[in-house]
Image 1 (cartoon, one colour):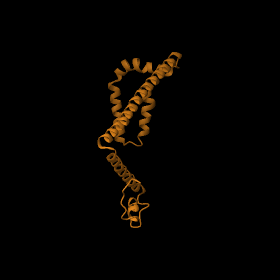
Image 2 (tube, helix red, strand yellow; image 1 turned 90 degrees about the horizontal axis):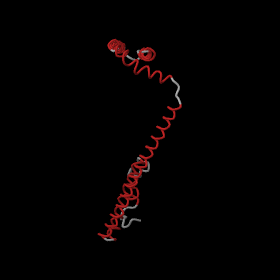
Image 3 (cartoon, one colour; image 1 turned 90 degrees about the vertical axis):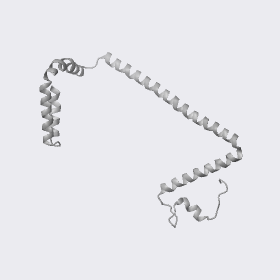
Image 4 (cartoon, helix red, strand yellow; image 1 turned 45 degrees about the horizontal axis):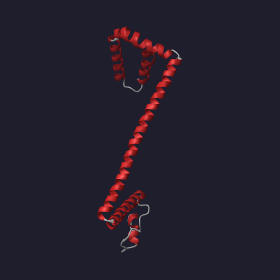
Length: 171
């Protein structure tokens, strides 16, 4: 009951500057109604079994066994978190290794099935597509800072300077 009078009522009074009067009066009336209806519950159950033990616990200085128990709990929780971190790291690394070796084996099988010549042409095509994506990304990130004289995007500046050049190889 002391905490209500010490903290809550002054906080509501300070907040009354920012809260419309009808809302603050309604909140205070709800508090008074709640207080009158549950006064017996507070005096019979909350005060002796919850509020008083918590008050004595908060106001008493910590003793050595409680500090040691707190240290043991902290140590165990850190050990459990370390174990969880190691498990998660193991599964993530395993997943990346499986994807890496699966792609290596899949690429090797593809070369075995279609032949080295077609596979190298496909890799060249794939690298060309990747280069196009990278150039388009860089061109869009520059926002036209290096646009050509005719207002073209920087990705097309090379093709505008060298018309008629057909790309026959990667280099």
